[in-house]
Length: 147
Image (tube, rainbow, N blue to C red; front, side):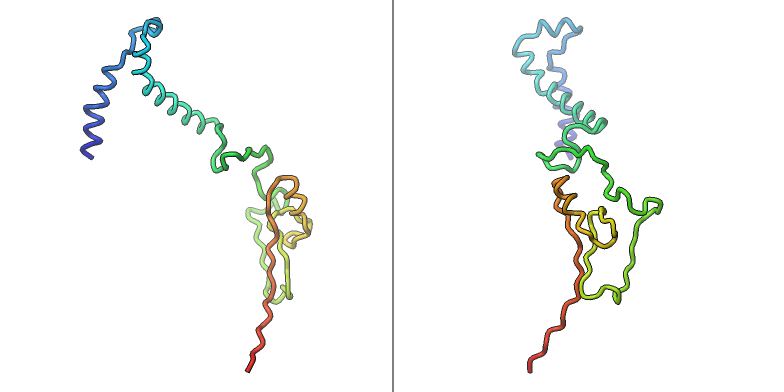
């Protein structure tokens, strides 16, 4: 903590006092190359802070949570576009007895038979480059005991 205190109370004020900041706007034209080099770290810091502030304010610069090379989607960011939109939350309960040996559930929210998968994820994946697939629930056959 002492080093931070020393930096903020001694080094930073001394650095700022040593900068060749002119009294008026026209004075910037009279600065030498060495003066501009001494101002460069401060200018870089101010530009970086300004960019980060504006990037957050206007959500530019790649978006939050995106991979570096990934483009931002212009589509609606909602996952569920049409199923039970009048409800606060879509929740589906299924009794274990009703499952049978295998049941395939939709995870892309595009199925016409939701919550059962109808394969709509295939066209969704082609259109969007996504890789979503169904949830497959199957009953495991009991292993036969060998004596």
